[in-house]
View: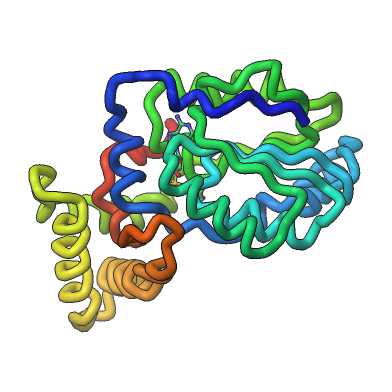
Length: 258
Ligand SMILES: C[S@@+](CC[C@H](N)C(=O)[O-])C[C@H]1O[C@@H](n2cnc3c(N)ncnc32)[C@H](O)[C@@H]1O
């Protein structure tokens, strides 16, 4: 796999999405549906002949802190994995985990998806989870372009995006937290504010056991339970917040594709 040097050394205008993930990292974790062998099984069931996952070349677009990429690389030791994310702070965390685990089959790069071209080579599996609904149109186009140009023959691409009606549940919590948000505050203060409100609402009884109350309650409790898990050792010595509640007030549309 040939990989050009990171393109972030080039001066560019500040990107609000980049700024947001630099300030508050996203807690990335394993995504079972995006595992190459799960994708291969689904492809076979659809009559395709996907490449063998065991020795596959895998590209993950928007890999965040590497939670999914690293989990795959630990299991498929003979496959090779390239993770690309816009945020150098998240890539630094991913890179730290890769070296601590001694993984030889993973490379992570701080690059925009828009900068991926033919020189990156071909991949048997391209994974893009939790990105498409949150990025502007030119990046959405770039995701599809990379899937068209960098996918090997018989390769499989996975691009997730939010869909209705299921996303109404998460969107409802996002709207509530955004209503109480003040984008002028520093990111850590915005997260604290959102968590305080989520805690308060999550602790309240869904008094009438209505479907609405139960759904809201379970979503808030889930958000709080999964928040703050990746605070901890930070290779740069900085305190890097990592919070799933942050995702609810982050900029970007998050809107389901219609
Ligand atoms: C909601 S997070 C999802 C992270 C990971 N895929 C997961 O599911 O846990 C979206 C990720 O997309 C990355 N991202 C946004 N715009 C990007 C771009 N233009 N190029 C590469 N990564 C980008 C962000 O830095 C962030 O890590």
